[in-house]
Image (cartoon, rainbow, N blue to C red; front, side, top):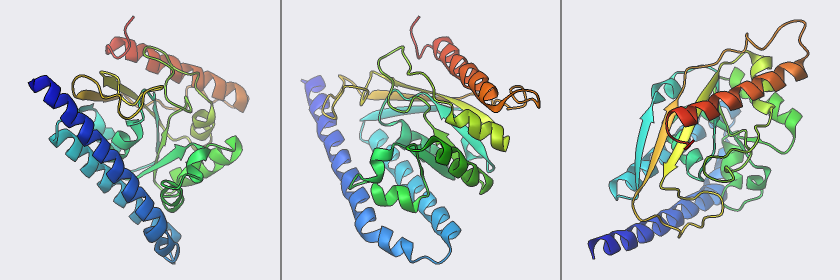
Length: 262
């Protein structure tokens, strides 16, 4: 009986969290975004919006933990709070990865799906926060480089969408590698895991697991670009080598940490 009550409580709490998230996002897009556009200093506007998003997601994660919907363990997360340009490259098992990483990273800029730019909930947020669309690979690299130069941490999920299944990744795209090679910003590989699976590919919001899901984040040591860049190596070849190396690095550590099962 207790387990059944716990399940329905978490189902209700999850639904209310989604409703609250949607209402807040829509309110920002319809009300706050027009006022934000009047802010004369674009850089100051982006800083304020990114800090607001960070605070909001920190509060949302705290609420989800307090009401027993989720657990969170983050190892090495202090690296996400260090000011200075860095590129976070993470696997993407669940829809909640973005929320968790933004809650841990005070000065962040995300690469987001182009579909979010027309989404009625997200369109105002992604524009005001200066997020980067993945629609145009060249523009993605150029805009990301400008955000790094401004001191933001770029958060990129190079799979482009949620992982296809447990123990599997989509092939990584090379945008982050071109960005790193062009700016010499270090890459921070980040491992994400959700056990039991929740909000993963093919699951709906109401597919609540039998117990509170456990989000685990492990930030690995930064990877410098110098090992991949050389004057006699073409940029395309260097980017391919770096992409393959980071994908293999993350995959191996997912196995080593037990996030993937061999």
